Length: 335
Image (cartoon, rainbow, N blue to C red; front, side):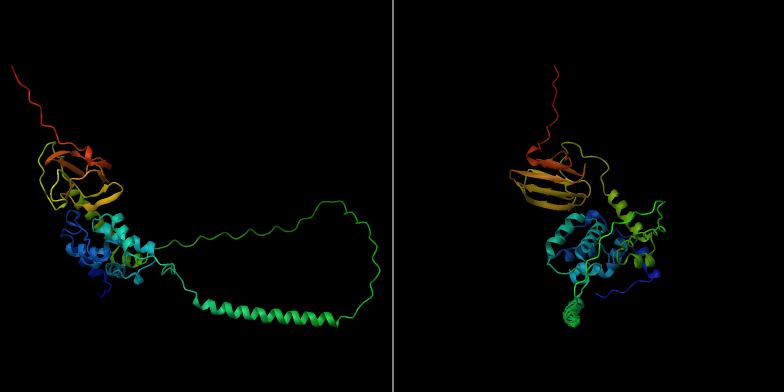
């Protein structure tokens, strides 16, 4: 993939051409589990009809780094913490959970004990040869100094010891005011290092202007808010699928996302299911005991038991065994 920088006019034209697309819409974004995380991000980007420059515009990350992430070319990326930050920014621009995507990236990248790459790593191979030369020079200088000192000691004639001088009592200082010297100059002020600037941030700002990335982020937030349902689901309402259903083919309990959210299902201490669900997508629980659902946002997911709405799940960990089928309204008999 060849990447060429865009001029200011081309960047403005590209931004204008993408104003009307339903890009970065969380309700239609999923991350493939096949292949590495870079291929999954590229597939999600292409399904949204975006290219590498659109992601670079939204994240303020160089287009070359975006392409390197998609190819998992770690040698072309900065040190690990910066690469992880770029992965989170990429995932956030697509409407995905940045922590889940970053965890997958860390799990797929090795962590060998090597020197850090740019912008933090530096190589000092040439200093190893200089250290050897310095050590050899030190040995030569030390030997020459010792030999010269030995020759001087042998050339000094022996002398008879002189009489010991008489010890006189120390004289008392004259009384009077003490005289102090001129005050010393104030120490120089410590200087603080310049703040670190994200690589490519100045170039991206110069090409697109400071408001271009903010406009893309605002459009993503507006589309995510529009996907949120206006009214809560009535208790006892029948289950109606509005998107893909993950999990078991059959089961009494279904969890359906009302808006983009992260769902993690645990079986004991192990993770059975983890995904960033879009609005309308659902997960059907298998007929097994000991399952718990971990929800990251309030009023984000509706539980259905036996095909009927049983209420919203609270944030945090909820055992699925506590979910009960809604009771039908009681009928009163008249005399």
